[in-house]
Image (cartoon, rainbow, N blue to C red):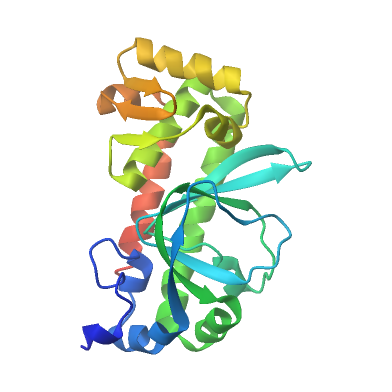
Length: 244
């Protein structure tokens, strides 16, 4: 194993889990194709209908996937962290983005040209295996989030969203503005304010100027709907399946 030949972040603990699941020989062949890039909060990596020029494998960054209706209404349908990939549909023959991808947490990512990625996918059974499993779980999460958004009250949906973000970031403290949460939940900012205030009054969170601290994880889970556990299990399955 020649670790020096591999992308630096892949062999570090905070590297991308999908890449780390590939055989070493595959990683050594892929290494020259990757750039390590810095992703800043709020950066829009793609819009629906945009050509997908690059594929991103986050390390410590977090990317929100937003479905867009009529160019202005949005709803978060997934999150991509170090367990996943942005742009996997290129391997399935889709050359344009289907969602708006916005950086939720700044950090680094491995980036590869989409044409190179597609070419490697066609010849690499290990890459095919991990991506098929990941896209399947990502679809399951998107379906559950859509169901949650239709049938559950905003307070429970906000609790679910905060818990999922906590799991992805592995931290009880993070920054999410009212505006971003409104876009993610598909509601007005006043709705976010009311729901966050309700959770704060119950002693579950502290929310001030976009800075969130989760004080009571079990309590917040109880305030959430069952969709949190379903989405959490799907996300855990995506990460675990990469190493099967």
